[in-house]
Length: 131
Image (cartoon, rainbow, N blue to C red):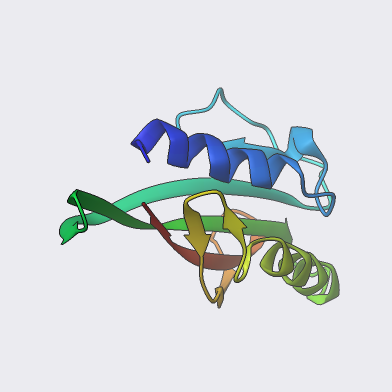
């Protein structure tokens, strides 16, 4: 898969989710977003990792790896139920799923807490491998 195909597949899966309003999900190098007054919002970032070539059969096969990060935010002092429920829904959407030649693996959650800008943050890390 090309980097563009990987990007498109991950974004397509993210836009299929219903846990957060589509207008409240931002992407890399997106237009400015003002989350003021929102009960929850998220940011998707795709970090491509190492690629490797394996000789299998009649020619080389390139494996591309990386991690998709979903940063989820709720206003401070509003509790953790909504952010945790949303993280569970997004985890289920990606964990151990396949989009053609793109495989997603076990999702990890990292409770960041106060981001210093009035939001409580939880990050999901979704490792992937593409052929």
